[in-house]
Amino acid sequence: MKTLKTQVAIIGAGPSGLLLGQLLHNAGIQTLVLERQSAEYVQGRIRAGVLEQGMVDLLREAGVSQRMDAEGLVHDGFDIALNGQLTSIDLKALTGGQSVMIYGQTEVTRDLMAARAAAGAITLYEASNVQPHDLKSEQPWLTFEHEGQAYRLECDYIAGCDGFHGVARQSIPAQALKVFERVYPFGWLGVLADTPPVHAELVYAKHTRGFALCSMRSPTRSRYYLQVPVEEKLEDWADERFWDELKSRLPNSLAEQLVTGPSIEKSIAPLRSFVVEPMQYGRLFLLGDAAHIVPPTGAKGLNLAASDVSTLFRILLKVYREGRLDLLQKYSAICLRRVWKAERFSWWMTSMLHQFPQADAFSQRIAESELDYFVHSEAGRKTIAENYVGLPYEPIE
Image 1 (cartoon, rainbow, N blue to C red):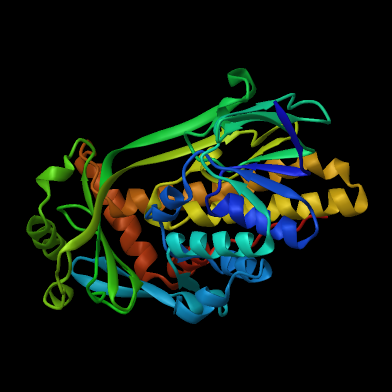
Image 2 (image 1 turned 180 degrees about the vertical axis):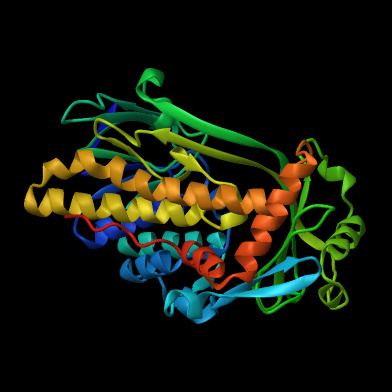
């Protein structure tokens, strides 16, 4: 078995693992990233595209924002379609100048991969049988296999950025974690198409037939979603059926403008809320989907991962530069304060905008009334906007 050494071992080469790696590398802290899948597989994953101000700032701090700043679409607001009418949520006006950036996770990952390669930092793709050891000790280590060779990787800290199904969380004893979960009785059928977006801003539509979202990746590439039953089959949704159903859920003014075309990607994603506490075990830290999942309605999944990255990066910076080992035990509590606020907002957006098959008439009227109040009250719109652009990152002191 061959032995390697690094300061911070990162499991997972998605955007959170790569972003953490880039920030640490730039700060002179050595990292090694282990990824189970191939680079091509990681690069091909279609994911979210709405970046909070905090994540945009973090990408700039990491020195990987050149293409995002050139090609990303700054959005100062979004629209909610209710009873066939569009209401604008003016993010910039309601939050004192903040906005969001439309820039696909695929592009973020591409930029981070290129930056890591240019920096000469090591990422081992197709690393199998990754297993952390001695997490409660001051010298944790991992074993893994790569290109037929068995390795032992010695390190100071381990960052688990390997997603909901990854090994990081599974390597923590079950009795050490408390799980909070809600599974929703529907999914999102998503279509990516090389067609111009139907509207200049994102549109969240509440309709008796179910929720719909009109999003985009660029001025020529659109991303649309429909609420569908959780048991729905992808093969039952030909492109024509999708476009017809989308039109039926949009206000007439938008439906008439919708440009349709062949889908270049189509998938159904189930919706769930999920949190584990704590987000650390000894010297293993969980980040992103390894620790929490949100329904995509609030555009918080990727952004929550970025705030976890910011928190761990700033803690490790003080650990290595100032010897502040006391901060290590604060990671989980700091992250969870923001996580639960984002979980609440994502649950709320999901509850207000979707049709729940088992909801009684009273519950439906309450949801409709609550959404109507928030959308048509300046105080309500301000609350939505403040949460949508992202709550501030907690300082590390």
